[in-house]
Length: 212
Image (cartoon, rainbow, N blue to C red; front, side):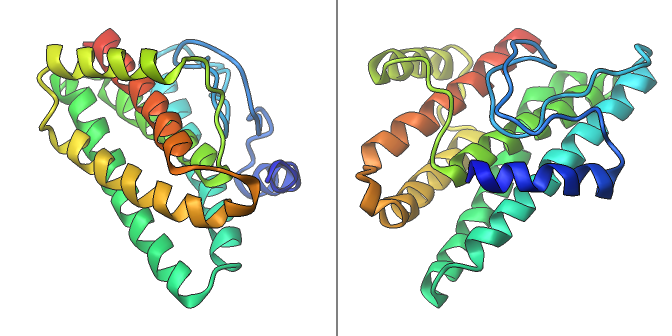
């Protein structure tokens, strides 16, 4: 799939006119930096709130465009049953992204920073989906550490039964079932998939805690 990403880089640049975007994996640790697959956040020329909001919008749109291209490529190689399953997974992932980003930005909904936070969230979660479609990510934690930190944050923030958490659990189960069939020849397991997606979820919840 990395070959696909390389071949799509020029298409994204031409289609969106964003030569300063990087098709990754890319490394970082803030709004513009964290170890992710997908599209790197742009280096915004304007540091005004309006300028940052515009950059975040471009980031979200570019990440979503890349995701759609990868999705369509995978979709085209599926059986009829596989296509129906993939469509359902994508619908539930979209619902999760919206629920999570709404939860993350709820305290800032009336502020000028809201577009920056919401659109950056959309871009980050979309990058996670790009990694999921490839069956990979930049894992850094052991499953036990991920599970403990995830449990702690969910409990502290009272998010165990939130809309975002419920949608993510549905997405995780459906995607990992699909992946176990898709990557069966590469010895991928449902457990490995669940652990990988849990780490992505942990990163997003940690971002929620930092922002709040």
